[in-house]
Length: 350
Image 1 (cartoon, rainbow, N blue to C red):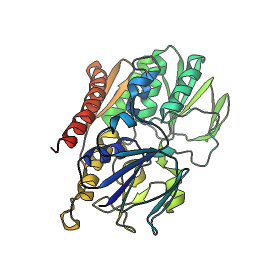
Image 2: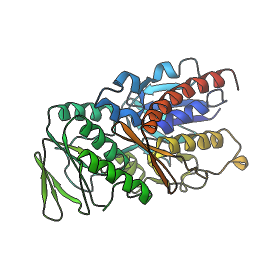
Image 3: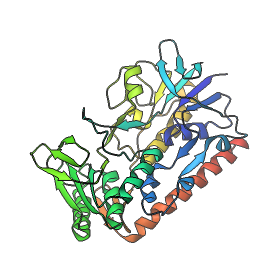
């Protein structure tokens, strides 16, 4: 019986495990947290659209009676040559390793300790508390996370500035989406300052490379992510993560799979893509080597909340409507329902 060790309980790691329920493998998931977080919903904490209990799934309950073992441990080192993983509780051997430890904020060498993050439930809760007491808020980063955060904070009646080195928000998306977001920001009084990177973050202001500064009472760092720093250091890989082949295996060690924010793939890091990759990894672990399937990637519509409105971006199209804001809530409910369906299907062998 092969031992499959999965590191990380984000969308990637949890869904690998869900897809391996009922397999003949010995599957164990390691994560320092006891819950799986629905991170696309973190922005809803600002105005109480969802509470923290609605945004997390208890891992012990999720894997109860599934054959999947969950151990609440912090991963400290990975030794692919010896096929061992060291945690704060001991050492684990494996036949196959799935690296899905997610990401850390990309700081670009700066000290951003005076800003609050927004990539985990813990950091989001801290950010919400800080923003509630603030009048002026600066959001660093105009990707979809920064845009969503800015919209929610603006709806709270705060004065919001968004800074980014790119000249348009959502610069990795199509231009139509950027134009619609700019229109939204202008209508809502959100101050977008693009074209100059942040040079320094201080307690009461951010200083831009063009010499200008923006004062604030609270600062949210949403300037993107990098592969888990522990993964970078332990596996000696770059900030983009583990270089993988078409089967999502590490080219250097084919018994190691990587996906989600930990994999160096030319796809946007979204929950949809992580779930899609998880299905590929699970099938490849559960099949003979010659029957492996290639990960081809899929283009999913991206839903971005804009306060009480929303944006749907797909390929070169961008549409704005309050319907898309409500659809985000539906997506969360469907995802949580699918977890239960996968659990049941795995237990009865479907």
